[in-house]
Length: 192
Image (cartoon, rainbow, N blue to C red):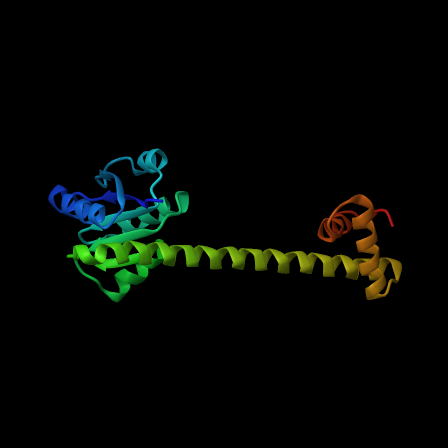
């Protein structure tokens, strides 16, 4: 499957050279756009696999705009900039930039630049997904623990008896234990 790339660049001469380098490396350049174009509409229409954005000297507005674009259309974003500073690199990373490359990218490096950005983006997204899943699991466990405590107080159950009560009601009602625990915490007169 060919990787589709969107180029956002205000300088046509350079974006043409970058487009040719990408095509030579086996990528499909879906379109070139200017930063003043409606990037949301373009992203919706062309659905790129990666975005390369040229920013002469990225300002906070540019980085904020990239952050908004990245939140709405999570894709690997590669920023080409004239210079690199640690602060700018940190801000670009916070905005969701997968790779930050100082200009004058040699055509031979284009393939690895895009592939590394995509791999980095996918690894970051997988970690973020695992973090969200872990946070959800911990939150559900806290709810179950609170429901067990409430059952132990109101019915003088042991901890094991409270858990078995939740489990039995979950099986009988075809719910998860977490859902029954939420119902217990939401209602004082949950059926015992």
